Length: 554
Image 1 (cartoon, one colour):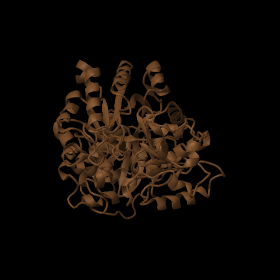
Image 2: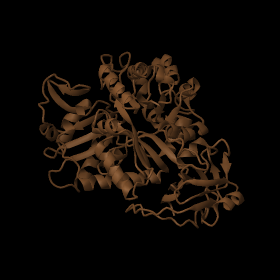
Image 3: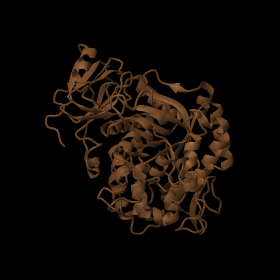
Image 4: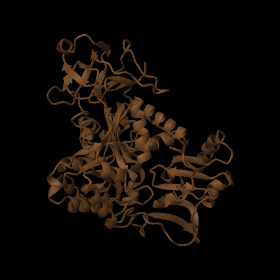
């Protein structure tokens, strides 16, 4: 369903390389097939917005034109238009920093990683740390964790620190171990973390809370590095059709950086930020209340906590031992007692709570803690969230709807994890794993995201995974645990209206109707009608925020 001559009349107004600020102006889009996701008028052919970036009218071209008056007209050339896509769980600065480091995503062996690192290191100053992310031992023939020795032969003196794909483990060489402030030998373990050791000496692998032991030794990024990282992340998000993200675990420094971009008209994405746990950002919100930038593109009214670790590194907290590691039930990164204290504090500060929980034990602890903290207020419009809700005991799923808790899930996690999730969990626990249809049936609200840079920033891959539960090459035929798949309409809603609702943005974004923000995406095919296998190939033609084009292929 490719369009010819598409958007030839569009006058696009932004240079993504420099992220130059754009002056708002009123406009009208015509000759489009618009899925509004608004029940009052689900399909339209034209829409107009005012200079503030709010929609004035939407419907037939003649009626919209009469209400809009003399405005700049944009001919969509028959393109499909949907509300701006919102990633309900992402790490914006994490993406930017990943784009500034060695990319190890998709590597199939330690040897391939070494080759990528050697290439990347040629551009670094002598002695600088070699940083990278994205390795996953589950993709290797030898699926054991690597060791420092695997890096030492090539990098004996330059410190190397490589973050695992899920950001819940890291791999250091001996030069990096020597720079750690603490003595890492012995049999002690840090709270909420795990140092893998052999004969009392660290092997080079650090899980969850233990990663800080190496990260503290890495020189901090300077202002120029962080600004460039954010520019790259914003450009990547816009190119993928994202107009909004829920930034999970935002530090006060990152919030201030986002605000500086917003001040200068350079924040080309609507960011709903969640404070990074028990931090300066949480302290400021408790002291000053909710934050909202006057430009409307940045807000913080919530906080993100961690319950457990990740499944790929066997840190997700399980009710019974891992099927492929019988002595291991995972990690509670935050103890249940401390988590209860933190959640109660957030409640008293009138903040929305979002908690990372992947294993069935982690999810149960969070649900029980939410129930105790909310009490009778569970019926109120609190919109508390469980981030990932990845492996849930089937009997616990109804608690999400009963407590009014959002299941914030990432469809591509299922298709990334499916080659090995059964080995981790055993067949019986798969009943509650990545159980999106079960959540839908229970009445719980689903918000969809990617967890980028853990997964790709591209929401089209999320739509595809949600609908097919297959890899990009179509495996397994019919999908993995296909009874848990979503329809195309449900998946699109999860990345638009339901994601907006989960971030308290449903009065502003997530659908296209008069009074809403003019955040929308032009596509060359219809994600509601194309064959599911074609969803990853639907092309983003342009991305608009507040009626301004922030990305275009033209």
